[in-house]
Length: 495
Image 1 (cartoon, one colour):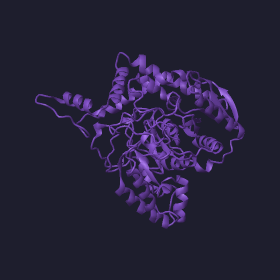
Image 2: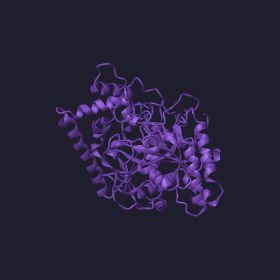
Image 3: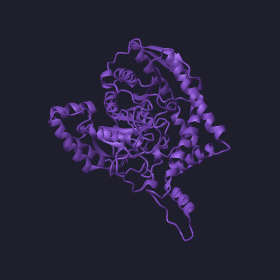
């Protein structure tokens, strides 16, 4: 089965249409791989019955010659997306037992295309984390390991289950969400492609909210072509989401020509941070050289407000989280704490939230409530929003000066050991987002592409930041890097 589950979307699409592989056969292979992968802890639930039912329906469409690109493709769905009658907990105890009676817009679009649900994927609780260690299901384990070292590594977060499942061939592709780097960082840690679209390109309806002005869903795939195919299936205007953009969705796959001659690619000097590993620095230079060899012009640029991005993000995101998570009160759905004689509604709220929310979620909710409070709203939240505007203006100025895309590292380091930051200041964990949060603050598209292995045999990725709404051009630049580096390494199976 491994050769089947190792297919890319484009390969599976071609083999399904030719009759070389059946949709049910492909679904059974992915379900079997998912059920046998307990040591990775990537899945929170495997939906075998649903997968086989959807695969059977997909096969009928294929046989009838009515097969969209995603028809028959087995997917893993991040636990943040609502799937009808399937546990959707956002990896939090406070949503224990919650089975939505509806699908998110994204999953609805995928099912309409004939995609197949292998199961729900583990993640950081409410998408708050960079290592997938805050989940109520326990941590996800990266399928990659250090050479000669069996210590379990993080797959990154918050879409760690999605990244691990795609890298380990437990599904053909997966959905992820990105609030500050939660698609791109785990993609880099696991050697896959992660696409964060322009804010508003993909509907947020039916996705459990973390920070509503930053959240954006996207695909996590085995190749840039797959990312283009799946992004096209996920995108489009949704009247149920007030932030969804009513603009046409281009054919992202058709844009993958590999021709970037004359493109101007920016290298921001502010991303050269102290303590960056030599492997990451060398990788960045390698990426620039490959783009130059392909005919692009490499231009040094400045994004002067980058240094304020992390502090601004960690004011804005917790503030929005505090507002969004106020709805989890033990009254309407999810967990409800037991009350004693004489306890009132305030006791119910306090006890339910204390029992249901993990420590990282509690930390961010309290931080967000603090910065929104009457005495500190102007000093923190309003100031952070002004910084956000300056960061967005930095990008606008650079793009207006003729820069077509920006090349940066995806992460400041390769994957680290699970538990290695347990006693560290939380800010050390937050620094994992140093190269990615600016993209969310500015609402821009970004993609992480695997480019090589470091000296310990772990994958590293580069990030390409595109102009707003120009994901097609951004993906073509990523496609050029992917073709030039020829990265096709896979983790050695041990699980």
